[in-house]
Length: 100
Image (tube, rainbow, N blue to C red; front, side, top):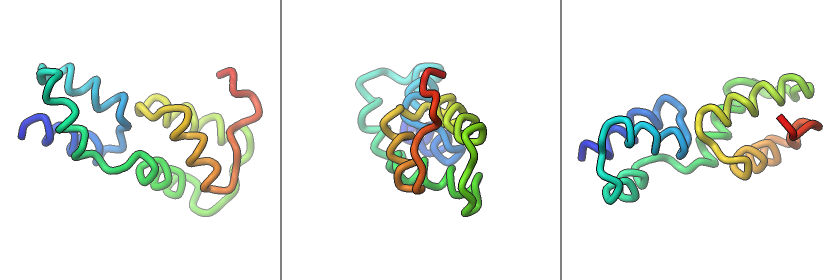
């Protein structure tokens, strides 16, 4: 129950799977409990889409804004594939320079 509470709390703050696992580790939750706790998190697609809609408010971003938002999603613990799919669903691809 404690592990699920941690996942729900940090997922509500917009953290992705990578950061949620970091929080479980930081809080000392045994690894065998992680998978069950991670089921409490909303789907990554919903979280990424919500983040992009909230930040962009229906506007199409320029390349600099795409990079800034992509970096923010990476810091929150989302994977490249989740982010790339999110940009595709939003109607835009990843920034031109994917080497960042």
